[in-house]
Length: 277
Image 1 (cartoon, rainbow, N blue to C red):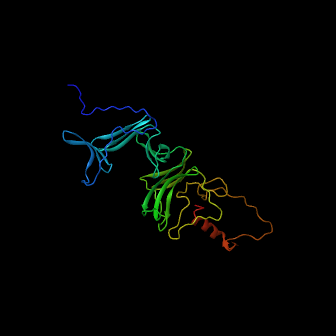
Image 2 (cartoon, rainbow, N blue to C red; image 1 turned 180 degrees about the vertical axis):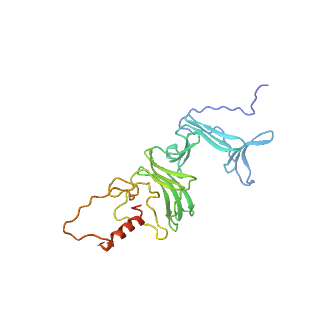
Image 3 (tube, rainbow, N blue to C red; image 1 turned 90 degrees about the vertical axis):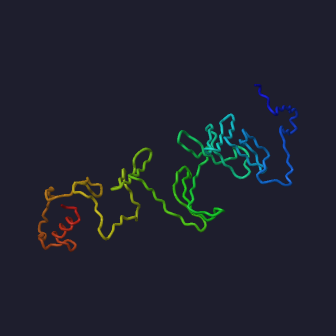
């Protein structure tokens, strides 16, 4: 059976100075129900596409927009997805933006399972709010952003908001890398530093006053000060130091003191501190 359209119209536009309309419907709406439609396309009595009098468009399937650089598909059943070239993506702009170049926020697909926020050489910022008001004047939020070629993660506040803490929660281990090399690891039982640890002048290492802190947890661990070669905990088997008697001086005995300490007290203190076994 031949295809016989109910309406098959043609027209020719020939004047570049004239704004033409191919199909036009002008409704004078003096009174009508809010659900009145300017267009209602049906199949078997079921609406497939309609245009409401307020301009809203409803499609039973999906709406597909196709251009030279990509395709956009809006699906009313499963949500919507976008299939575009690398210059596409979901774009937002300020009120009144009317061209692609004026839409300055872009979410794009870099690859399978990879969502990207990018816009040429413009540094990007992602914000997630804890609280805010309608004018975004009083807020608490976290951010992930590029700032002067530095990737920053943190929190910020505005107005009556409070700047909140940042917590990184990992199941087993957190490892910090620079240029592909391990620098610092945080684990469940210990933290590992992979390079020298520097402390600025006037800054100290502060310990607790209840149980205390050990430097070295086994006698086989090596330790040294002032660039000396690290050694294990010394024992009575260590080689003796060279002794030179001071001719004519006072003999040293068990009662002799050095800044108020006897040799026995010095030995006891070194052993109690773990510097001698």
